[in-house]
Length: 267
Image 1 (tube, rainbow, N blue to C red):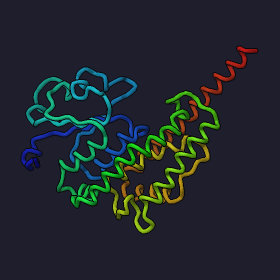
Image 2: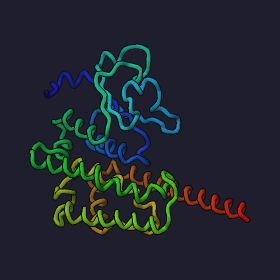
Image 3: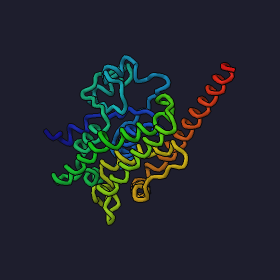
Image 4: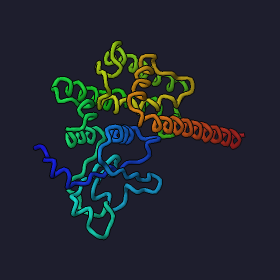
């Protein structure tokens, strides 16, 4: 059931997220919402401080994952006392791709929304297919290749690391051959960015965790096209790349010290 314009005006929509410097799932939603100039309240939460485990937030999202979208009626929002998290929400939603789709349904008159998620059922089906592909196939391979370098998983052998990067690289070439048309800038042969691009591009920054690795040339051009088309994403990507480099260096330094300490102990 489509929400009336009057009903939409009575709602405040709050997007809870954490740092776009290291979270692709948050980055995709924040970048899209900012580019489309959607009337959201952006509320950044601290992972380090454990904001997402606060009692009030757990009422909104028992899975305490981010991003989380929360809508409250005007009367609930303006009521005295308590933070937004403490107030009764009319609606809450998590899982980044579900949030993206909901925002498109919520603001159907928005021009950027119409381009990112067209109403044509075949175009929309292709975008949904690419969103599922990113979530189920491509991104897991990126994470498997890079997580040990970033300290999210235990160290692995150089041989295993090369194998994982090779598997990821092969899939990126297949992605380019399957979804990146030579005549169109964006995935699925689209001329303007869609939700699929907002979902796919941010996570590719993780691949820089391994020094010397370069994305396939066609994928590099795809990322560059997205940066030009969505200028609000550029500072997020710059911050993301810096954070990946910092994490990779910190992880490498820590493991070097651990190896040195271990050798010293053995001697």
